Image 1 (cartoon, rainbow, N blue to C red):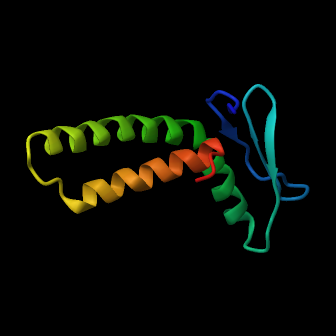
Image 2 (cartoon, rainbow, N blue to C red):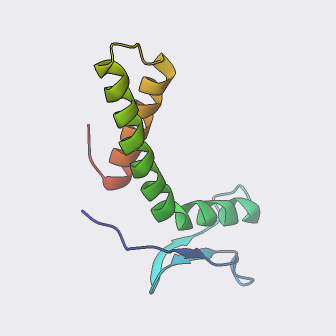
Length: 102
């Protein structure tokens, strides 16, 4: 499964209905007010529009964290637990973004 390549852009809330859209070469998603207000709609649209860049950054972080953990293990040193936990969180987020069920 692949996603629409970035960059994605979030629109400003519509004056008509307060909805925002996220688009690349066309619409990807329309977001409405879930009762939390128009600022929330805009924040959600901005977060969605950042998704391709966030995924790319996480994939890069995963590569380097995995290398650090492997290198430290290879040298016989103990990798701090938070680095291993962070690698697991990154892996989980990437899987969620790609629709991989674990």
